[in-house]
Image 1: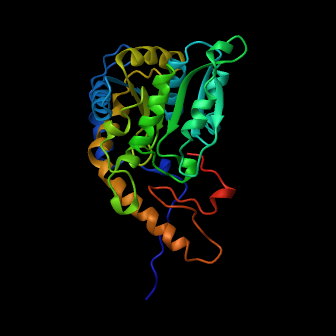
Image 2: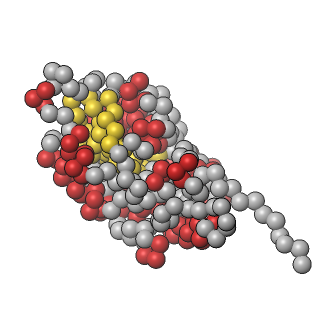
Length: 309
Protein backbone atom coordinates (compact mmCIF):
# COMPACT_ATOMS: atom_id res chain seq x y z
CA UNK A 1 0.00 0.00 0.00
CA UNK A 2 1.45 3.36 -1.08
CA UNK A 3 1.15 6.20 1.41
CA UNK A 4 -0.77 9.18 0.08
CA UNK A 5 1.27 12.36 -0.18
CA UNK A 6 -0.20 15.74 0.68
CA UNK A 7 1.00 19.30 1.14
CA UNK A 8 0.56 20.93 4.55
CA UNK A 9 1.13 24.69 4.56
CA UNK A 10 2.13 25.79 8.06
CA UNK A 11 3.39 29.27 7.25
CA UNK A 12 0.51 31.16 8.84
CA UNK A 13 -3.27 31.38 9.04
CA UNK A 14 -2.87 34.39 6.74
CA UNK A 15 -2.61 32.04 3.76
CA UNK A 16 -6.22 30.88 3.99
CA UNK A 17 -8.15 31.04 0.71
CA UNK A 18 -11.68 32.41 0.20
CA UNK A 19 -14.37 29.73 -0.05
CA UNK A 20 -16.67 29.28 -3.02
CA UNK A 21 -19.45 30.81 -0.92
CA UNK A 22 -17.28 33.89 -0.39
CA UNK A 23 -16.49 34.16 -4.08
CA UNK A 24 -20.18 33.92 -4.94
CA UNK A 25 -21.07 36.56 -2.35
CA UNK A 26 -18.36 38.86 -3.68
CA UNK A 27 -19.61 38.46 -7.25
CA UNK A 28 -23.18 39.39 -6.32
CA UNK A 29 -22.50 41.98 -3.62
CA UNK A 30 -24.58 45.13 -3.64
CA UNK A 31 -22.16 48.07 -3.64
CA UNK A 32 -21.91 51.84 -3.66
CA UNK A 33 -19.27 54.41 -2.71
CA UNK A 34 -18.06 53.64 0.81
CA UNK A 35 -15.97 56.84 1.08
CA UNK A 36 -19.27 58.68 0.76
CA UNK A 37 -20.77 56.30 3.33
CA UNK A 38 -23.18 54.64 0.92
CA UNK A 39 -21.96 51.06 0.45
CA UNK A 40 -24.74 48.83 1.85
CA UNK A 41 -22.63 45.67 2.17
CA UNK A 42 -19.88 47.53 4.03
CA UNK A 43 -22.51 48.95 6.35
CA UNK A 44 -23.93 45.46 6.94
CA UNK A 45 -20.54 43.99 7.86
CA UNK A 46 -19.71 46.93 10.13
CA UNK A 47 -23.08 46.73 11.89
CA UNK A 48 -22.72 42.98 12.41
CA UNK A 49 -19.19 43.26 13.80
CA UNK A 50 -20.19 46.09 16.14
CA UNK A 51 -23.06 43.95 17.43
CA UNK A 52 -20.83 40.92 17.98
CA UNK A 53 -18.28 43.01 19.86
CA UNK A 54 -20.85 44.90 21.90
CA UNK A 55 -19.69 48.30 20.61
CA UNK A 56 -21.57 51.22 19.09
CA UNK A 57 -19.97 51.33 15.66
CA UNK A 58 -17.39 49.78 13.35
CA UNK A 59 -15.25 50.56 10.31
CA UNK A 60 -13.82 48.27 7.61
CA UNK A 61 -10.13 48.82 6.87
CA UNK A 62 -7.79 47.14 4.35
CA UNK A 63 -5.52 45.49 6.94
CA UNK A 64 -4.92 44.83 10.62
CA UNK A 65 -1.83 47.01 10.52
CA UNK A 66 -3.90 49.95 9.33
CA UNK A 67 -6.60 49.11 11.87
CA UNK A 68 -4.13 49.23 14.73
CA UNK A 69 -2.48 52.38 13.38
CA UNK A 70 -5.79 54.19 13.01
CA UNK A 71 -6.87 53.11 16.49
CA UNK A 72 -3.66 54.27 18.16
CA UNK A 73 -3.67 57.58 16.28
CA UNK A 74 -7.33 58.20 17.10
CA UNK A 75 -6.69 57.74 20.82
CA UNK A 76 -3.32 59.54 20.71
CA UNK A 77 -4.33 62.51 18.60
CA UNK A 78 -1.67 64.79 20.10
CA UNK A 79 1.87 64.21 18.84
CA UNK A 80 4.25 63.13 21.58
CA UNK A 81 1.63 60.94 23.23
CA UNK A 82 2.80 57.63 24.67
CA UNK A 83 1.31 54.15 24.42
CA UNK A 84 2.07 51.31 26.84
CA UNK A 85 2.31 47.97 25.03
CA UNK A 86 3.97 44.56 25.25
CA UNK A 87 7.59 44.20 24.17
CA UNK A 88 6.64 41.18 22.01
CA UNK A 89 3.37 42.48 20.63
CA UNK A 90 2.59 42.81 16.94
CA UNK A 91 2.16 46.59 17.00
CA UNK A 92 5.61 47.03 18.54
CA UNK A 93 7.53 44.56 16.35
CA UNK A 94 5.82 43.92 13.02
CA UNK A 95 4.08 47.13 11.95
CA UNK A 96 7.06 49.15 10.68
CA UNK A 97 7.03 51.50 13.66
CA UNK A 98 4.06 53.22 12.07
CA UNK A 99 2.69 54.69 15.28
CA UNK A 100 5.97 56.62 15.67
CA UNK A 101 6.86 57.41 12.06
CA UNK A 102 3.37 58.48 11.01
CA UNK A 103 1.66 59.46 14.24
CA UNK A 104 4.49 60.75 16.40
CA UNK A 105 3.37 58.34 19.14
CA UNK A 106 6.05 57.12 21.55
CA UNK A 107 5.96 53.38 22.43
CA UNK A 108 6.65 52.42 26.05
CA UNK A 109 7.19 48.63 26.01
CA UNK A 110 6.48 46.46 29.04
CA UNK A 111 7.73 42.88 29.26
CA UNK A 112 5.31 40.27 27.98
CA UNK A 113 4.98 37.17 30.13
CA UNK A 114 4.97 33.72 28.55
CA UNK A 115 1.17 33.79 28.41
CA UNK A 116 1.05 37.13 26.56
CA UNK A 117 0.01 39.19 29.57
CA UNK A 118 1.89 42.08 31.12
CA UNK A 119 2.09 42.34 34.89
CA UNK A 120 -0.52 44.80 36.11
CA UNK A 121 1.92 46.50 38.46
CA UNK A 122 4.42 46.98 35.61
CA UNK A 123 1.71 48.53 33.43
CA UNK A 124 0.78 50.94 36.18
CA UNK A 125 4.43 51.75 36.90
CA UNK A 126 4.94 52.62 33.21
CA UNK A 127 2.28 55.35 33.30
CA UNK A 128 4.00 58.72 33.27
CA UNK A 129 3.59 61.11 36.17
CA UNK A 130 1.50 64.00 34.77
CA UNK A 131 3.30 66.33 37.17
CA UNK A 132 6.45 65.77 35.10
CA UNK A 133 4.82 66.41 31.72
CA UNK A 134 7.39 69.06 30.94
CA UNK A 135 9.99 66.29 30.49
CA UNK A 136 7.94 63.11 29.85
CA UNK A 137 5.68 62.06 27.00
CA UNK A 138 2.01 61.98 28.03
CA UNK A 139 0.61 58.48 28.53
CA UNK A 140 -2.73 58.20 26.74
CA UNK A 141 -3.22 54.54 25.77
CA UNK A 142 -2.62 50.91 26.76
CA UNK A 143 -2.58 48.19 24.09
CA UNK A 144 -3.18 44.46 24.53
CA UNK A 145 -3.02 41.64 21.94
CA UNK A 146 -5.46 38.71 22.05
CA UNK A 147 -4.61 36.07 21.09
CA UNK A 148 -0.92 36.85 21.59
CA UNK A 149 0.93 35.55 18.53
CA UNK A 150 4.51 35.73 19.80
CA UNK A 151 3.46 33.85 22.92
CA UNK A 152 2.21 30.95 20.81
CA UNK A 153 -1.38 32.08 20.40
CA UNK A 154 -2.08 32.32 24.13
CA UNK A 155 -5.43 33.77 25.21
CA UNK A 156 -5.97 36.76 27.48
CA UNK A 157 -8.92 36.23 29.80
CA UNK A 158 -11.81 38.63 30.21
CA UNK A 159 -10.85 39.02 33.85
CA UNK A 160 -7.29 40.05 33.00
CA UNK A 161 -8.54 42.48 30.37
CA UNK A 162 -10.96 43.93 32.92
CA UNK A 163 -8.08 44.55 35.33
CA UNK A 164 -6.10 46.38 32.66
CA UNK A 165 -9.23 48.36 31.82
CA UNK A 166 -9.58 49.36 35.47
CA UNK A 167 -6.00 50.65 35.48
CA UNK A 168 -6.69 52.62 32.30
CA UNK A 169 -9.82 54.23 33.71
CA UNK A 170 -8.12 55.00 37.01
CA UNK A 171 -5.52 57.07 35.15
CA UNK A 172 -7.78 58.52 32.45
CA UNK A 173 -6.31 56.36 29.68
CA UNK A 174 -7.85 54.41 26.79
CA UNK A 175 -7.51 50.67 26.12
CA UNK A 176 -7.08 49.21 22.63
CA UNK A 177 -7.02 45.49 21.83
CA UNK A 178 -5.21 44.16 18.78
CA UNK A 179 -7.74 41.41 18.23
CA UNK A 180 -6.35 40.00 15.00
CA UNK A 181 -7.29 36.55 16.35
CA UNK A 182 -9.87 37.55 18.94
CA UNK A 183 -12.36 35.00 17.59
CA UNK A 184 -9.78 32.31 18.29
CA UNK A 185 -9.65 33.49 21.90
CA UNK A 186 -13.43 33.41 22.25
CA UNK A 187 -14.12 29.97 20.75
CA UNK A 188 -15.18 27.39 23.32
CA UNK A 189 -12.67 24.54 23.54
CA UNK A 190 -12.63 23.47 27.15
CA UNK A 191 -10.22 20.58 26.69
CA UNK A 192 -7.68 22.80 24.95
CA UNK A 193 -8.06 25.73 27.36
CA UNK A 194 -9.31 28.39 24.96
CA UNK A 195 -11.57 30.78 26.78
CA UNK A 196 -15.07 29.91 25.70
CA UNK A 197 -16.61 33.29 26.53
CA UNK A 198 -18.90 35.55 24.48
CA UNK A 199 -17.04 37.99 22.30
CA UNK A 200 -18.61 41.11 23.79
CA UNK A 201 -17.63 39.96 27.29
CA UNK A 202 -14.04 39.39 26.19
CA UNK A 203 -13.63 42.99 24.96
CA UNK A 204 -16.01 44.78 27.31
CA UNK A 205 -13.24 46.80 28.96
CA UNK A 206 -11.74 47.95 25.66
CA UNK A 207 -12.37 51.34 24.08
CA UNK A 208 -11.45 49.93 20.66
CA UNK A 209 -10.68 46.58 19.04
CA UNK A 210 -9.15 45.70 15.69
CA UNK A 211 -10.49 42.39 14.34
CA UNK A 212 -8.95 40.56 11.37
CA UNK A 213 -11.20 38.67 8.96
CA UNK A 214 -8.42 37.43 6.63
CA UNK A 215 -6.67 34.98 8.96
CA UNK A 216 -8.49 31.98 10.40
CA UNK A 217 -11.84 33.37 9.25
CA UNK A 218 -10.64 32.98 5.67
CA UNK A 219 -11.77 36.19 3.97
CA UNK A 220 -9.27 37.43 1.37
CA UNK A 221 -8.77 40.97 2.68
CA UNK A 222 -9.46 43.22 5.60
CA UNK A 223 -10.02 43.99 9.25
CA UNK A 224 -12.76 45.80 11.13
CA UNK A 225 -12.19 48.22 13.99
CA UNK A 226 -14.92 48.77 16.57
CA UNK A 227 -15.55 51.35 19.26
CA UNK A 228 -17.83 54.24 20.17
CA UNK A 229 -19.59 56.29 17.52
CA UNK A 230 -17.31 59.26 18.18
CA UNK A 231 -14.22 57.03 17.94
CA UNK A 232 -15.32 55.59 14.59
CA UNK A 233 -16.14 59.05 13.22
CA UNK A 234 -12.56 60.14 13.91
CA UNK A 235 -11.20 56.80 12.66
CA UNK A 236 -13.04 57.15 9.34
CA UNK A 237 -11.30 60.46 8.71
CA UNK A 238 -7.91 58.93 9.51
CA UNK A 239 -8.64 55.99 7.22
CA UNK A 240 -9.06 58.44 4.36
CA UNK A 241 -5.83 60.25 5.31
CA UNK A 242 -3.91 56.96 5.22
CA UNK A 243 -5.30 55.98 1.82
CA UNK A 244 -7.68 53.37 3.17
CA UNK A 245 -10.85 54.80 1.67
CA UNK A 246 -11.76 52.26 -1.02
CA UNK A 247 -14.86 52.99 -3.04
CA UNK A 248 -17.01 49.89 -3.80
CA UNK A 249 -15.57 48.00 -0.84
CA UNK A 250 -18.71 45.90 -0.42
CA UNK A 251 -17.12 43.34 -2.74
CA UNK A 252 -14.60 42.63 0.03
CA UNK A 253 -17.04 43.05 2.90
CA UNK A 254 -19.31 40.41 1.39
CA UNK A 255 -16.60 37.82 1.99
CA UNK A 256 -16.28 39.05 5.56
CA UNK A 257 -19.98 38.47 6.17
CA UNK A 258 -19.67 34.89 4.92
CA UNK A 259 -16.65 34.45 7.17
CA UNK A 260 -18.69 35.47 10.22
CA UNK A 261 -21.57 33.22 9.23
CA UNK A 262 -19.68 30.11 8.14
CA UNK A 263 -16.15 30.03 9.49
CA UNK A 264 -16.16 31.02 13.16
CA UNK A 265 -17.29 27.53 14.07
CA UNK A 266 -14.36 26.03 12.17
CA UNK A 267 -11.83 27.61 14.52
CA UNK A 268 -12.43 24.87 17.09
CA UNK A 269 -11.21 22.33 14.56
CA UNK A 270 -8.16 24.51 13.86
CA UNK A 271 -7.26 24.52 17.53
CA UNK A 272 -7.63 20.76 17.87
CA UNK A 273 -5.42 20.20 14.83
CA UNK A 274 -2.76 22.54 16.22
CA UNK A 275 -2.76 20.65 19.51
CA UNK A 276 -2.52 17.31 17.70
CA UNK A 277 0.41 18.64 15.65
CA UNK A 278 2.15 19.92 18.77
CA UNK A 279 1.71 16.58 20.53
CA UNK A 280 3.18 14.80 17.51
CA UNK A 281 6.15 17.15 17.26
CA UNK A 282 6.92 16.66 20.92
CA UNK A 283 7.31 12.93 20.27
CA UNK A 284 10.04 13.51 17.67
CA UNK A 285 13.56 13.61 19.05
CA UNK A 286 15.09 17.08 18.71
CA UNK A 287 11.77 18.87 18.32
CA UNK A 288 9.58 20.45 20.96
CA UNK A 289 6.74 22.90 21.32
CA UNK A 290 6.95 25.11 24.39
CA UNK A 291 3.98 25.65 26.64
CA UNK A 292 0.31 24.85 26.13
CA UNK A 293 -1.11 25.13 22.60
CA UNK A 294 -4.35 26.98 23.29
CA UNK A 295 -5.34 28.05 19.79
CA UNK A 296 -4.08 27.73 16.22
CA UNK A 297 -0.39 28.57 16.69
CA UNK A 298 2.37 26.09 17.49
CA UNK A 299 5.96 27.29 17.32
CA UNK A 300 8.77 24.68 17.55
CA UNK A 301 11.71 26.02 19.59
CA UNK A 302 9.93 29.33 20.18
CA UNK A 303 12.82 30.87 22.09
CA UNK A 304 14.76 30.97 18.80
CA UNK A 305 12.09 32.39 16.53
CA UNK A 306 9.29 34.89 16.36
CA UNK A 307 5.99 34.66 14.55
CA UNK A 308 5.46 37.46 12.02
CA UNK A 309 1.75 37.32 11.22
